View: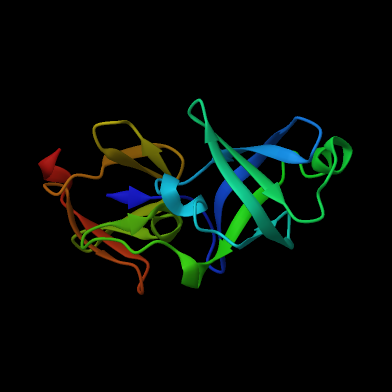
Length: 163
């Protein structure tokens, strides 16, 4: 039901890991449900700085990237632990009924006219997502429970009797 992480203007899609080798290549930890999004990138924001992508490699199930101007292990280390972001307008398209996690967080949850609280986190359980409301209540993000999601109004309607 939900995809990815983030804020309104920038979407976090990955985090820079350790340097690999001596040429400035970096391991990238994907933080997106759209793993292929890195393959055709020509540029990406890393730690708030726009960088040109020279190469993207998949080796042994891991992702590695090489950026222009990052040509040594030492310069690569300066990027470690920085987040990779893209503009919201470059977000991967979603199917009907799918929402980005960052759009769900901050929505107010209602059961009829009764306000239950605000979504503070979306937990990925494997079988279905779970909305954490005000840091304490857990609501399964199932079609039988969630009646409507209005991202523009930041409102989620649920049926508490369904779980």
